[in-house]
Length: 280
Image (tube, rainbow, N blue to C red; front, side, top):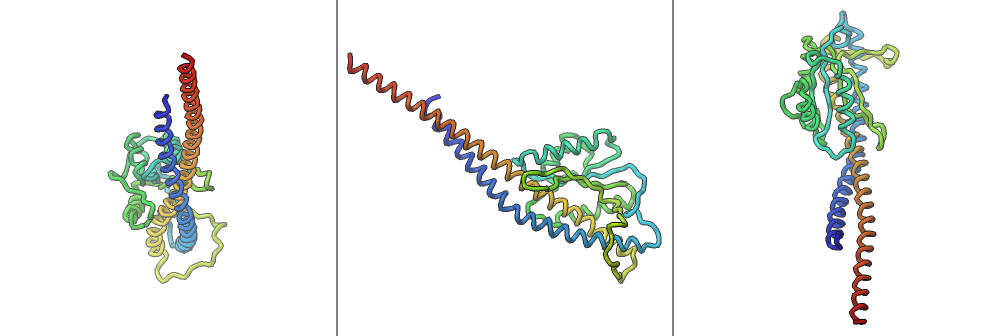
C-alpha cells in the first residue's frame, strides 16, 4: 500500500470517526430529557394504579380487566426503535422474544409491533402481527400516536379475543446496561399488601371509574414502556458510537505509524539512489 492510499484511508476513517462522535453527542444530549420523561411517567402510573385498585376493590362483582380468566390466547406488544447503530439493543430483544414464543403455537399468540426495526423483524420471522403498517417510534413520544391502538387492545381483551396482554421492551438499568423486560399489563392483578394509600372518593360508580380509568392505564403503561425503551436506546447508541469512535481513532493511530514508516522507507531509498548516482 502506497503513501497516497494510506493517506486516503486515514482521511476516510477520520470522517467516519467524526460522524460517530456526532451521533454519540446527540444520543448523550437526549439521555437527560428521556430520563426526566421516564420519571414523570412512573409517577403518573403509580397514581393511576392506586385509582384502579380502589375502583376494583369496590366493585359489586368481578371484572375481566382485573381477574385471572384461565385463557391461553396472548398478545405481545413488542417495542423497538426505528433506527439501528445501537449495539446489541435489538438483538437481545429479538432473541428474548423468540425464546418466549419458541414453544407456543402461532395460533395462540399475536404480536403488536411498535417501531420500524421490529416491524421488519416480525415480517422476516413471519410472526402473526396485528398491525399491517409500521407504527413509528419517534423520539418525541406522545400518547396521541398510539391512543387508538391502546383502546383497541383493551376492547379485544374485553371481548375475549385475547386472554393476556404482555409488553416487551429494553429496560434501562444504567448507561452501560439495558436488559429485556417483560410484564403482563392485562389483566391487571393487584397485590393487596402493596396498596396502602388512602382510598379515593368517586363521583361515578366503581364500574364506570374502572372502565374509563383502564383506558388511561393501558395507554399510559405503553407510554411508560416506550419511554423506558427510548432511554435504553439512547444509552445503547451512545455507548456503541463511543466504541466505534475509539476503534476508528485506534485504526488511524496505527495507520499513522504505517504511513511514517513507509515515508521513512521512501526517503531512505531516495537517499540511497542519490548516493549511488553520485558514486557512478
